[in-house]
Image: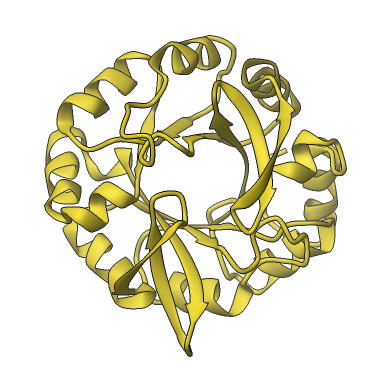
Length: 251
């Protein structure tokens, strides 16, 4: 059995780590380089860095900041935000990223998933899916969660897998920042219907939320932000508690 992963997420705006609720009301959460170093030293399994306004502001991810973060960590590092070409990915991998996360650009031009997978390997390609429950359907949103699409979430994640995505980062916008727990029902349905790993994101607020997610085998990894940034939960304690509850986790 593969071990479950704990992944802190750095949402970056104007070079700073931020965190909001339901993708709005952002507040400063600290220096991304310092946070990354702390998480790497504390035993995080991976780190995700999302430049959350790159697409909206029609610019590329902050390469310099990616280099500074990557120089301080020794764990797998995924970077997303404003990525729309093979050239963008090459620049980020050269800056120290191990994987890239694409979202709006994949929805706009799904062939990008195929191109990146063919060029760099599927293990490098994470497709981030921001989903909200609208009129009885789970609907994909883009541009940092600002814009709903006509895509239904479950068919879209299957298309992503077929096109060569190596992993799905599934964020429930309804749960994001609420600290009321992950969207387990939806995440489990998706995870158990795909052959690639699914990272659950949105809603982590307490250790039982992680235990519940993993004991139900609803995801391969759990991503969280504010509870780590504001030191509400420590990664070493969380991982130790998960192990005590019978979850296979790398300490």
